[in-house]
Length: 197
Image (cartoon, rainbow, N blue to C red; front, side, top):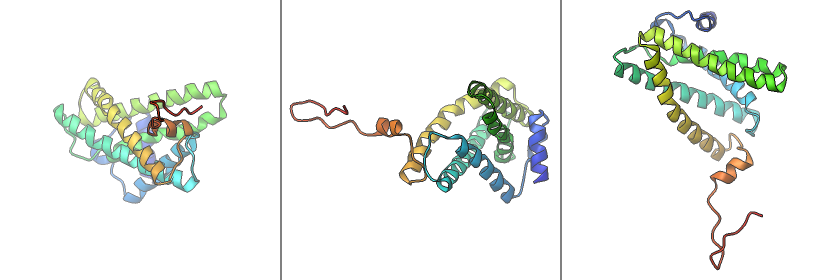
């Protein structure tokens, strides 16, 4: 794990090597996914469920999101005539380790913690942006355009994943989310709709 940890620290300091450098044994990638899944599960206070179910859900969700983004960005960079032949999954996963800073915000006052969380998220995007620019040679605007275009796909994946996770019993969504996703109430005789109140 030493190489992976050093690479993560280097990426946080804007030090990027060629894409082929970011290849690791499968078990190290699994450990990294589990770590990020633990952080995501711990920070999802509004999502219920037992610990094992939440950890499994957020670990699988993180893997799916990273894999989808890696595939999308390789297609986007190829379209921008700056192809990267080496798979980007490992690079994006290691760049995502910026999230390990998030639990530190729990030591701060609530208002400050919210600002710090946003700052960490923005910093994570800049780390990923810089890494993709460095390994591809594409312009920052082209890479940023790809990241922005991926956002709707990420949102659709999130909706699908949370819905599936809830149906499988891995997580419990907040009650207001379940109500909004439920079917409209059937019309009562006389054309009136049943009221929730």
